[in-house]
Image 1 (tube, helix red, strand yellow):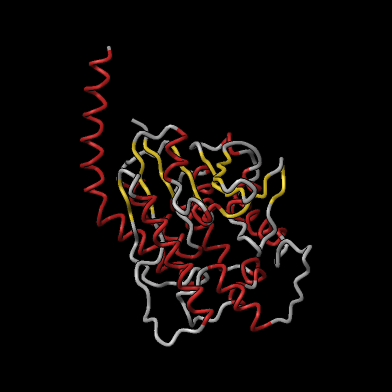
Image 2: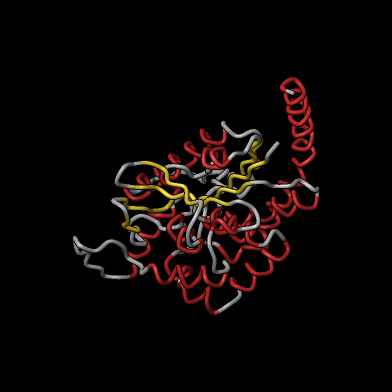
Length: 299
């Protein structure tokens, strides 16, 4: 029986993924496939290349403590208020408040993709997806056809960058008639993608918001932003119904941009993992027993 791990998007909240993975590793639960969306693709690629949770955590911390992270300017775009704003809505609001930008009809994004490429070069080793130790897929969305596209071969950094390319912020990748952007548009938790890889048992890690703050006297922007947030929560919830087991770290209304809370988010993933791992092991035993009986009947 093959176990697949579906890692959802969520910006900084996605740091909880490696906490959950650390517990699975310590409990001897072998992962056969990994699919990731956006931040889930970043964590998934790192672990698929080097299946050592402590090593991944160390590398993440080095990056988040470095001038390379500071150069991204994330903290300057996003004040800590209005946490319910979605990834995209908050960025637009931050840009609007701080900069005077004339958006040309020909412009495809506000941030050059090279900035994300540079960050990924710190976190992910150069190479092709098909050469990872654990089979891996980075999930993106094709805006031309309105469909999910899962990368299972080719340049791993490029695939992850596309998976994390926020529409309108980072230019889409235009190739073969496709316009590829962040996989969170269609599959914020890539349950279907990891099933297509061959997983018999899917473990999903959903890092969507678990608690919305009070919605008092909202502005137009607040209403639009909350609508986007609720849409994302609902879509993630519908997707994980098709997983066999779900971890959902209690990150409350933590904003996607709060990367410097990495210790807290990683620990929340560890706590969620420890709290549910025995239940997962029980389900795995039942499923393995079923597969053994099925195999004997076929022989």
